[in-house]
Amino acid sequence: MKYIDTLYTQTLEIKQSKFISYLLPYTLYEHTLQELKQSHPKARHFVVAYRYLNEFKQIVEYSSDDGEPKGTSGKPTLMVLQGADMIHTAVITVRYFGGTKLGTGGLVRAYSDATNLVLDTADIFEYKEEIKRKIVFEYANIRKIEYECLMNEIEILEKNFSDTPQYLVKSDEKNMQVLLEKIDRLVTII
Image 1 (tube, rainbow, N blue to C red):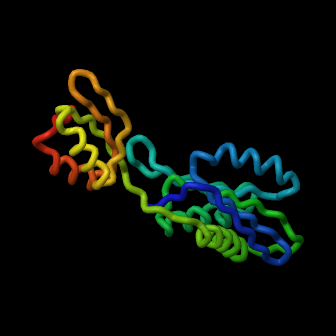
Image 2: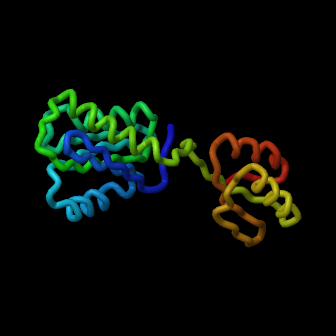
């Protein structure tokens, strides 16, 4: 699965109709849609599609044609997101009607092409599910633990120095497994 971390936009013009596509992280979807409706009051349609993982690690998908003929805009946009294996990502395409009807096939191509156009310009990252672990160890091992975290791309989220040091660490499952194997005798996982 793949994701993006910022907003991208591209415009496609077909027979005087403008298709302005916005590719954005899902967390920005609601706010961005409201902003676009205010900043494009003369636009005819605001076609949307998104995909994200819920708390049960299930993919949630949604699309809307927003007044375009059924199945000609939202679904093709969603299919492009599916084909690119995007997650935690939304697309909003603002359409200004140019006076010439494109037909159902033309609309499907236009919305698909607009989404592909904006996807082609985006910096896309590989999605890795991250896990957190709390580790406890002796003060004498702090340098070794921090070195291994650095070398294995483990982020130290919290450091607690009470009776014994406790770190809350985060990384993808593969890197976490490598770290825990290397420092197995030095730490206790709580």
